[in-house]
Image 1: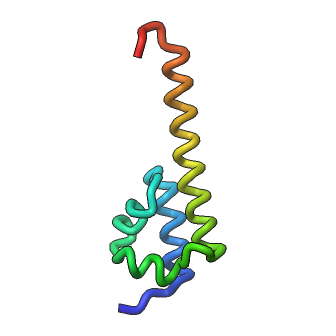
Image 2 (image 1 turned 135 degrees about the horizontal axis):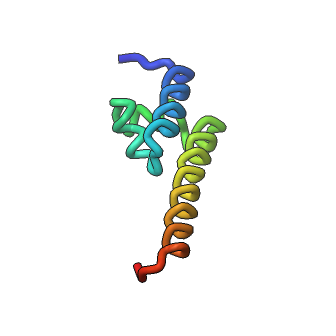
Image 3 (image 1 turned 60 degrees about the vertical axis):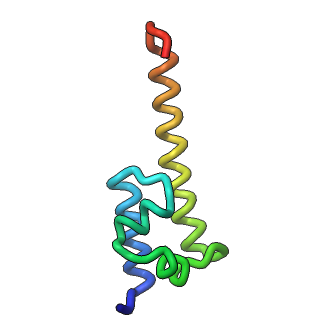
Length: 78
């Protein structure tokens, strides 16, 4: 099956935002494609691959900050 890189990219960004994804493997699962297909369309050094990884990292950092904030504000030890 042939995939359109631009469509996969748009769908990947949408899935990352809607499902708070952290890992490329999660993106692959939500897109319903093989990991090899993902890397064919988004080689590690490509701008789109970097943008996808930045979004994933943004989600991870936002979640870490949220958890740490809740732990800090909690009156009971974790």
